[in-house]
Length: 132
Image 1 (cartoon, rainbow, N blue to C red):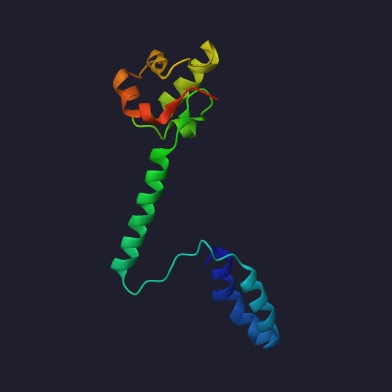
Image 2: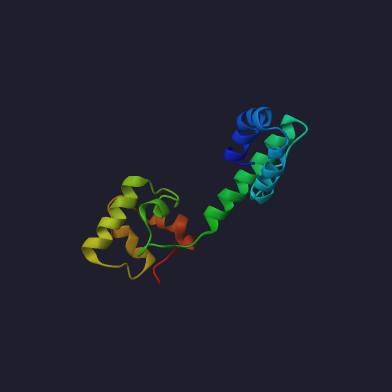
């Protein structure tokens, strides 16, 4: 359940029911049935189950990030920082190099950017592209 729904249930619902009676129950049920619960987290019977669920979610998100292909000629700073060994400063250096010298023709040209070596390129080679 999202934050606005929790707020309605926890604070507003009891107050509204006291003031308006049961007439509001029908209105509120229509509101809650229209709220999208597709992204709602499931309930768990113990902490270990919840922890395992969170670990699974985090692993899935990490794998999705690790499998995405990044075009170094079009990538934003945020996208470039998803690469191994590329932080904010190196991402900015890539963008600056790109603006000064034009698009990269090959992935290996990334080594021309100060602070990026062949090992960094090799670690990320499967996720890099220069094509549109």
